[in-house]
Structures are given as structure tokens and as C-alpha cells.
Image 1 (tube, rainbow, N blue to C red):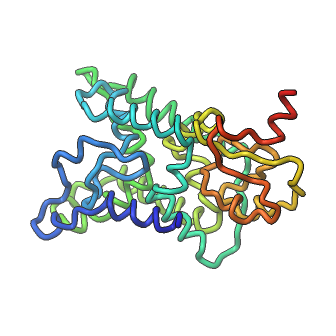
Image 2 (image 1 turned 90 degrees about the vertical axis):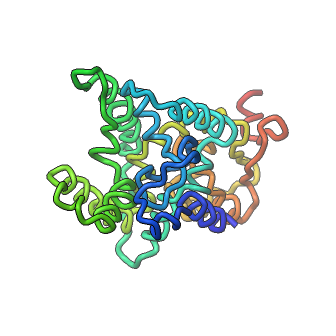
Amino acid sequence: MRRSFQIASTLITNSYFYGLFVGQLIYRGPLKYFCVPSFNCYSCPLAVFSCPIGAMQAVAAGMAYQVAFYAIGILGAVGAVAGRMACGWICPFGLLQEYLYKIPSPKFGVPRFLNYAKYGFLLIMVILLPAFLVNEFGVGEPYFCKLICPAGTLEGGIPIPLLEPAIRDQLGGIYMLKMSILVFFVGWMIVSHRAFCRTTCPLGAIYSLFNRFSLYSMSWNAVTCTKCDECYKQCPMGLKVYEEPNSLNCIRCLKCRDNCPTGSIAYSHRKLHRPPAVVEKLS
């Protein structure tokens, strides 16, 4: 069922096929005033909604961009209800990473300390640089989108020059830098599960802050759990549920719950269910 949600979300978010037939590279209709709660490039020729990270950078950069304030509200609402669940269920770039990881190759884990790098990208590239590295008019730029974002390169940076030959002459050093970053991440995502999500995604960094307090959360039964590590084997983020049920990196894909041999893992409303492990700690 989760895969169906991921595919449906990707198709709905990127459904502007009409533009390919009429020569309109980027959809700029009324739907672009709304952000999807997932990682999808504004400049993708098929995109019908805005990217929340691009919108947040617009706020930090001092641009008059109304959709940016909607984006912050949407992210807060989604995070407060379900934490990082959007990453595991509706993110197109997350879906791509899962398919890339299926390619036969040697597989490697991601060092835990790199999990914190995404907060640096959020703070520096999404907030601080757009806010303080500004031009003579006091307006910044979306530096994460401009310099880093592999999703933007894949979804917009590659197809737009292919569809509009005149743009190719304007491509320079920054474009080559972003292409190199994309190639690096594609290779990394083939050998490491959801490498971008774990280490770089600023949207995942935002949602992760809600994981321990969201309305719906993971719970773990310390009495029935045998610590067989089946949850770890199934987890795309390399987590052991019994160590921290609501880890900041958990994307709530629920593969651990669905594959737990003792049924010790649940995803539930905080007020309706409290796992025995939590009860023991409080008592």
C-alpha cells in the first residue's frame, strides 16, 4: 500500500503533461501557490505545486512570495500530526532513492554522525545564507536550490535544457557543479539506503523535529520484543526500534511494524495507546 501512495503522490505532483505539448516549460498557474509537503522541484516541467524548501528560502531571502508562508504552516501541520511520515509515504525523491537502492551493487551503511549534517544544510543553506548573503537591494538567493539540490538538478536542471536548446548556451560552472553533486548522490543512493534523506534533506530535518512529539507516533512493547533485529534489517534508515522508537530519522514507513515477528511495534495515536516501555519509565 505504501508504494501505491508513493507512486500516486509522484504522479499527482508531477502531472502537467499539457505543458509538454504547448511548449510551456514551467507551469505557473494557481496551483503553484500551494506547496506539497514533500521534496519536489518547482522548476520541474511537470510540477504543478511548489517546493516547501524553495518557499522557505524565499522567506529568508526577503522576497515577496506569499506561498512561502503557506509552506511553513503546511510543514508545521504535517509534522505535528505525523512527524516524518511524509518522507516515507509521499516524497517523490524518496521513492527514487528506494528504486535506486534496488540496483545490484555492494551495499554500505551511512555513518551515524552524518545524520546531523542535514541540520547544517537547513540552517546554513536554507535560512542563514538567503537571509544574510544579499545583493544591493537586500534580497538573497535560494542557495540550497542554486548550489546543492540534486532533486532540482534531476527534475529541472536536466529536462529544461533538453526541451529549450537556447538555454544550453547559458549553462556554466554552477550547472556543472550541480551535475557533479547529482552524480555523486545517485551513486551514493545506489549503495546506501536513502543516503540523501539521512544526511542532506532539509525538509527531513524539519519534519524530524516533530517525531518525538507528533500526534501519531511509533510505540514499542518491551515485554514482547526479543531484539531479533528484524526491524533493523527492514529499516531504510538503519534504525533499531527498541533503541529509540521515535528516532529523529524514522520516516514511519512502517516496514518494521509489518515485519516484526512478535508484533511488538505499533503506530498509534498518543492519547489512545501508551507502550509498556514508556509506562515503565514513567512509573
